[in-house]
Amino acid sequence: MSEQTEVKYGALASAMMLSSIVSVGASIAVIRISFLKLQSTYQRFLFMLATANALNSIFLLWHPILIPRDPAHSWSIGNESSCIAVGFFLMFGSLSVCLYYSCLSLYFFFSIRTDTKGPIMPEDVIGPTEFAAHIICWLLPITLASFAAGTQSIGFDHETELCLPQRPCSDTSAADCTKGTLTGEYVTYESDVIMMTFQGIIFVGSLLALTCTVLIGIKSWKVGRRTGNDQDAEISEPIKQRIQAVSKQSLLYALVYFNSFIWLFVVLAKFGNAESNTYYAFQFLAFSFYPLQGTMYCIVYIRPRYEMLRVMYPEDPTSVVLRVSLSTAGDPDEIEHVRAAILGDAYVPPPSVASSSTPSRDSDLPETIQFDPSCQVSVGSAVSKPDGTDEQWASIEEEE
Image 1 (cartoon, one colour):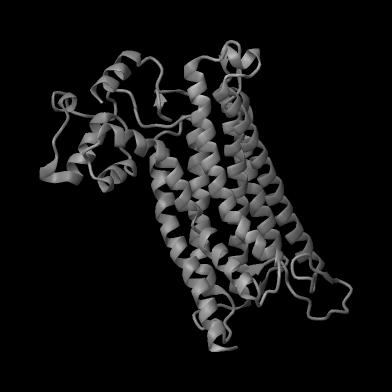
Image 2 (cartoon, rainbow, N blue to C red):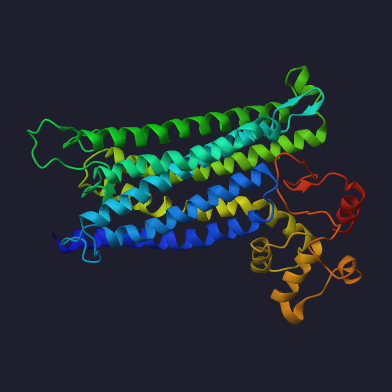
């Protein structure tokens, strides 16, 4: 193995590990924020998606280290058993993230459903099946990955540089060998079936998510043009704003998901010559963007929160607004505590906060920075407007 090849694969390993480290931190931030809002179906799905992303990133961080050691992988310390272990976690993490993103897409789809009486709450549709969805999103990945590990059907593929369920046959004439769907080389029947199942689940989940995103986009487009059918024409302005806010958030999540998985699938499908620079470029994109999806999900998740805080505090530096967005502060009083801690002597409280009482999480002020597709939204913002707080909300908007 040439020194140039070792450097190239070393760059792949470095990209995967660096992206994984950043993604773990970002996923933990989403977990901390969404944990305080688990009464919402949307927040529960985001909490579990972030958890799956955090676990997936932790597993990917160790993947380049635990692959079998050879002259091209001087950084690795693994063997055949460790390859099976990291292959198990790669399968489990990938499937869990895919299934939870599919559930989130369905939630967004049901969030834009309306009738002449108003919106149909997604909790009313998903509620009875949500527990079953969580079971499937964890049990199916664990079952398939466990079967792959238990049958020792996971092996290291030197072209993709990943431990996958495509274990080579030691004897190509053996009765239990077949040409693998991934490599085209002789592999065990078990590993080939497992790989096809793995790819099939991700394909179906991705297709479902894509379909929901397209339907949401069409609905938002019709509402935006206001030239839809009679049912669309009777939708109130606040509901139209909510539909457009949900559509934008759904599209951003879709871009993150497909940008993360498409490069991995190109690598797994091995389009073109595996020794070419083009294939290596696809590998580098896959090893960079796939582990980074937790970070990009975090950016999309806090976007409405950041935009609202940017409007509320236009004089604050971007870094301060970003740090407040990543905090667990809920009501305005808590936000001021965080701002004061960050700004120090430069902190100047707004008039409404300077005259307020001692802040607490039980404050009766509305939670102005939570995005929830099932709630009404304020004008020009994808931010929730809690029920029963119209007077308080109006006063805050006037102060802003």
